[in-house]
Length: 163
Image (cartoon, rainbow, N blue to C red; front, side):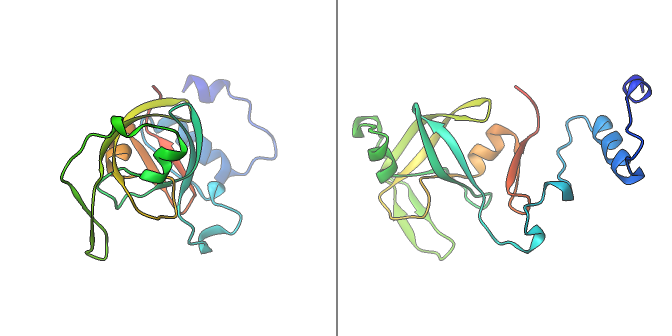
């Protein structure tokens, strides 16, 4: 209440906008998205959610956030681009299955250091030797570890808490 009592409120603010601001003050640890955050084309887009991250001291573009994936995926071509040696890949016998029911044997798993926004992560990825439209795929393991809420509608992720 102290914040609301001491807040300077512009004369030309709409009641609806003021209500949104007040609600955000009371929403501790609740992540919400508003219509103000929609991309220019509004709700009519069908784009995937891609991020730009720092990985192993390099900037990596086309990092796909996929809440439907049960694994973080790193194509072998991305490791080659990052000049990460094969000796860091731990061999395993995991088969990664796609939505079409087909499977691809993992080359192995690797732990990579990521910086996304102000937050640093150490994440395990399944390494696949496949041609894909992304450089990294962040699935549910990252989403849960990072405590983020992805919104493909708003084309953003929000962290639930500050580290």
